[in-house]
Image (cartoon, rainbow, N blue to C red; front, side, top):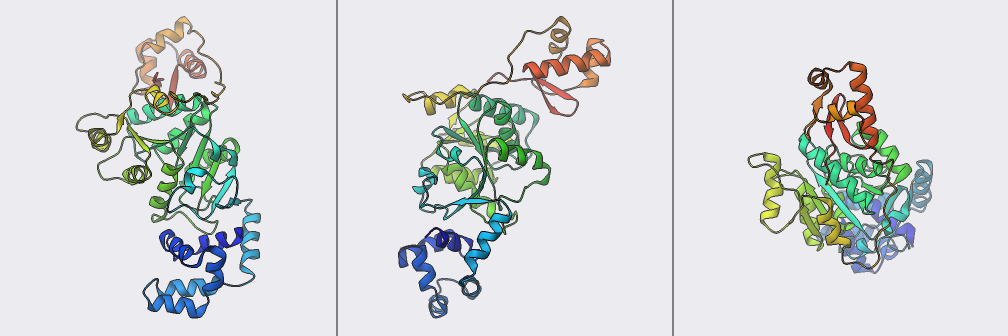
Length: 369
């Protein structure tokens, strides 16, 4: 039966709602495959159920060698998959009316069974403040055993995944393409790291490239896998709010970080808070809400290194930093220290966990949240 879920899932001309209607009409994906002969597809076109191009796609895919050929592609790409029939399929998604018919993956599939999960989403072009907050919150959540889920997009998504990995925590990336496609391309090192230490999943097969139409669809999976969704910087009209809509439809809790008055990237989050989202200023706001009342607590991640004390030189340089990134040349000028001393101190403080390098040459105090 699994192969018929795979077959129905692969039909790109049919949306998930139409696929679910066919399952309800015929009983299960196998019966859908059996009944969708040429006569039936033409009748459904006449009835206005789907288009002529959809019937053509179904006719072309409805052949005995389709299953073997598709499995060969998956094997060549080293891609595994699960369906709602499999034990590894997450219960949270099973409860959705538009649950994915298949989930393709690379990495550790056991993460789909994690009880404590938070989707972290936000702008693809965040401010420095947004990056710092996302890194601090996602890292702290991961340290406390909460699995961080996002879409591996540029901006807040990428920062959240990296922070979870840096904290030796667990993270899941939900893609808007096949799991053999890394998008954006500059995220390839992150993509490989998540496969090695976390999980990359998608409902789209390996033949599907990154397409704009796919991203709203994948957003329902991000929220569907999550106990709650945290929003960090979003405009009033943004793709981020599509995920929020999915979360609300699915009965998930929405958390939002307040932003600066007058900043367009704060209008979306501030409006969410105005309309009932839980205001978040520290990770404990989420941790206490999600796991505070649970008897069984999540296993905390083993933190890399510890906060060793600063040397005199390091403290002097640290005092010249703030939560907003400072360029290394400015630190050299302010402290009066040599280039070698400043670089050495910055490297040491970053390793100790006191500071973070947001972009090359720009350093900021690590936010304690």
